[in-house]
Every structure is written in structure tokens, then in C-alpha cells.
Amino acid sequence: MDFKAELMKRTEIIENILKDAAPKEEGYQKTIFEAMNYSLMAGGKRLRPMLIQETYKLFGGDHEAIIRPFMAAIEMIHTYSLIHDDLPALDNDEYRRGRKTSHVVFGEAMAILAGDALLNYAFETASGAFDLAETEDEFRRVAKALQILSSKPGIYGMIGGQVVDVEREGQPLTKDVLDFIHEMKTSALIECSMMMGAVLAGAAEDDLNKVEQMAKNIGISFQIQDDILDVTSSLEVLGKQTHSDEKNHKTTYVTLFGIEGAMAEAERFSKTALDILDEISQTKGLTNPFLTELICQLVHREK
Image (tube, rainbow, N blue to C red; front, side, top):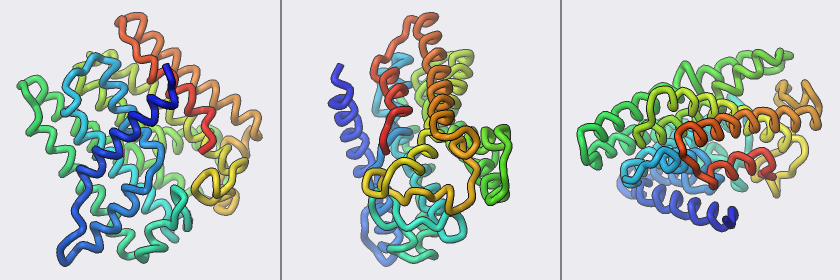
């Protein structure tokens, strides 16, 4: 398997899904559509929709139209979180994905509204999957996936992690608190993605629990690598400002363990995720070589 070629192929598919889902920039309120699309179509890894797709394939899903609304919706939610995260009241970042952040281009008020709009539009988009359901069972799967989409980004997931991150800014954190923030703020959307893919493919409840644990470990590993790149990379490579954590006095795995120690921890969490994937593969006879390689690559990425 040529991983890079396969990655490009999947990314292109996701970009086309997002283009189809993006609002048309017209009408008296077209500025909000322009602001939404400016951030949504700015590129990026498209990791979360890709994880929906690959987990769906892992569990034998064969009606890919049903997952497309969720693939678009999760990227909209991720994008809204980035727009708000970059605001002066939070991280006050000027660059994201190699271009000026939303609040720099459109102003703070419109950036806030663009984030709000993407969150609402995500659920409008995801609910379109009901129209694509071909059986009663598939209809129930869509409903369960919507429950996951409603929960994981919320107060017991991403927002909850963001709250603790904001409240503890500038304070030294223990590893337990840092892990809580990573599990909620970063892992929650990855858990959401993989669990929705599994549910839509008809995975059993015990497998869904394993997917959730696998995704949690992927998320923590991903965030640790992000913290490492904040120290070791550059604006040109990373596409956003580096040393942001230092500027905001944030405790990270790098500050707790140093760069080499943080790299070792990222590898450890990644290996745990791969072990769970291997367990699913062995017990269920299910494989997805691309998903396995994707998890491996995430911990060694440069941006």
C-alpha cells in the first residue's frame, strides 16, 4: 500500500464532501457564509472525517453515503472550535492552517458568529443522514450517531476540557489534570468520529467500548505530538504560530517530561491504540491496513 497516495485520495474525497456541504455565499447574510467557508475550506489534515470513514470500513460498512453528512458535520464542529480557540479571549492566535485566523480577517464579532453558525450547521447537515437511511435499522444507527455527535463535543467532552484549560491557564498542572484536559478537549472529537463510524456500520456495544478507548489513546498521543511541534516546528511548516503554549504559560507533556520524554509518552499512547485495534482485528476478523498506518503516522507527523 502506498500510504501517501491513499491519504491524498481520501483527503480529496473529504474536500469534495465539504465543498458540497458548504453554504452558498449569497443573500444579505452572505458575510457569515464567507466567514464559515473561509475557515472550513482552509485545508488541514481532515483527520476526524477520515477516522469516521476508516472505522466504518473496519466494521464492514457498505453504504458510504450514510456517513458523508457526519463526515462534514464533524469537520464543521472541529472548525468552529478552532475559530473560537483562536479568539483574543482564549489563545489570541493570528495564524491557523497557514493563513490569518478568522477574527483577524472578519473581526471578533463575525468570528464568534461564524463559530456559532458552524456548530448549528453541523447538526443541520448531520440530520440529513435520516433521508439517506435505507432500512429501519440504519435509521436507528443514524439516531445513535447523532446522540454521540451531541454529547462528545459538549460539556462532558470538548467544551468541558476547554473550560478546565481556560481556568487553569498560567497555573502548574499535574499530569492527571493535563490528561483530563487532553482527553476532553482533544480526544473527545476523535472518540466521537470513530464511535460514529462504528455505530453507523452496526458495531456491537462491546466493540464500541473498545473503539472509544482506542480513540482516547489516539487523541492523547495526537495532542502530545501537537505540543512537541509547538516547540520544535515553525510557522512555515506547522501553519500556525509556534511557542503558543509558552506564550500562554501552559503546562504540556513537554514541560513535564521534556521533548524526548513527551515523544516516548506519545509512542506509548499510540501503541495502546494499536493494541486495541489489533485485538478487534483478531477477535472479529476485521482489518483496515490504512487505519493502522494512519495511527502510526500521526505520532510522527511534522504538522
